[in-house]
Length: 122
Image (tube, rainbow, N blue to C red; front, side):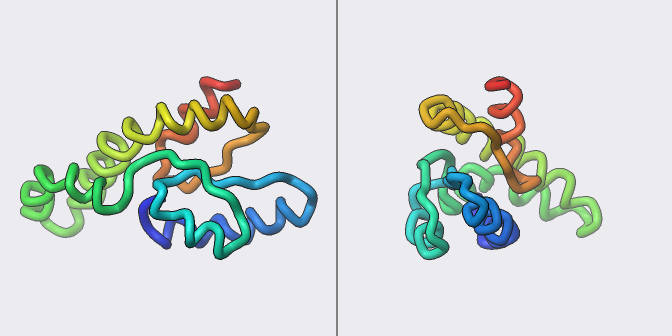
């Protein structure tokens, strides 16, 4: 969850679940703690910050942005979210989900570590 556009759509669902008595916690880079707290939720640290992801994406940037605009999205998505963010987040996410005994993992479509963690935890 390196960007507001990945966090904001989850907030109404998180509030609805909390209102119904469910304990809701977000898992994201530590830089998200103030923003998550602003919405009234706790944060488990897991994953890269936007800057860390951007730094790891830098070697791919020139090649991807040399493509025609309509051809960039697939390459950018797979590199940024599949090859960079997911592998970095998965170990920490598995650890917090195991220790917290999460009943469900709800995630943004770009958080590719989340479905792997959910499947591996049953």
